Length: 511
Image 1 (cartoon, rainbow, N blue to C red):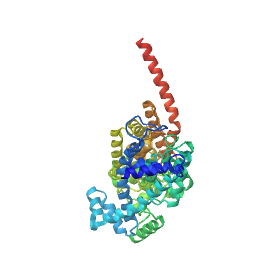
Image 2 (image 1 turned 60 degrees about the horizontal axis):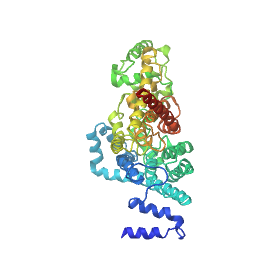
Image 3 (image 1 turned 90 degrees about the horizontal axis):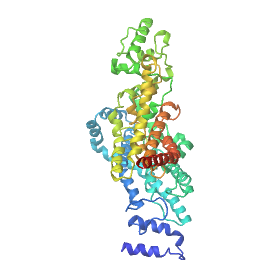
Image 4 (image 1 turned 90 degrees about the vertical axis):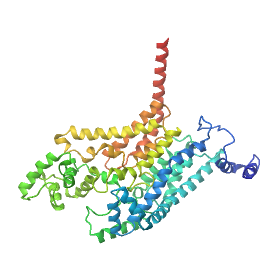
């Protein structure tokens, strides 16, 4: 019955019929419900029995773990940060140090129902706006060109939402997807013709046009003003200081500190928790003895009060201190906790996704589950994923080792960002999400196996260089992948040239 109804609709769009111009819209509904009756005549082509729609649905299925965690984590952060109750915040921070405590907190007194409600309220409207507005532009261009609506936006629509903060205004999300889809894809000919990843192009437009809505205190809830008021009330009631106060700063924001903050500064702050377990303890101890003697402080390293610790770190070098500007002490304090995993900065919480950030990129575990499915189905390139991960890790490791071994006193006076543990870079920001779902876009990434390795290594390297060196932009994944997209044809060209030369050499050797 449904098949006959769709056939009747299609008959109304035959050439010469009044609805002929709207045939792409009718055909879209047909191919969404049933298998496409014909093979594609224009790119993109897939050499397989399945059509593009089912190919794209594989990616959507791979994104389901990220979607489920996006709803849960968005709701949880909104529930806690928007409560205005510092006791609830303390309970969350204390319980989330273990996974048993985390789930006990979430399921206590049926809190999970409120969490899911808040999560759906934060994620679903953006998904609907993305698909509705982006689908509208897909339909407009399809009708104008007289070709079928591409299923590529099934993936672009959800990827775009996942790289947005939940607080983005709805009109801004609509403008972003409109400009991104039209300028990065449709003006080049539609799906299969785009030069760069459309979802990242949408985000890049928003980031550089409305930077205040894409970074800063924008990560929690749907109303940033209400969240700021809630946090202010918590800090007031909890009598917190600037060091232990509640904030919605992301981990990359805490990482993005001025290069005036050196390795020795963050290590000295960490001695109160780790004692001699920090990297530059010998240098710190030498300076501390001088500071203790000149100032007659009668203090013990590793057992300092907050006032003593700040005085030691910010006192001038000639007085035995470490010479950090007092205005940077708070940033150094938070960086120290991030660097050494103190408090709510454990590797486990970063891996599972118990942190604030863009909607769908907080959980490394969810991204890995999607990667396994994409690799198993052959849709995602494992070479690109592995290469980008290796490129990021090796570049971060190079910074870490050079900071430690190429400077005096184990790199004590090098910028703290240079010595940040290399593996932690893989757990922060959107690196895992980018290497699994963004860098592997089959249209804007290379097709030759060797080129995929070069492309992945390039994107990973650029990501870390931007993170560590750029003072204004703490996340480099978006720009690195967009830059990689631009160089992808060049990588393919030289990979193909290398392949032809190698084949020619083998043929001559066999002759």
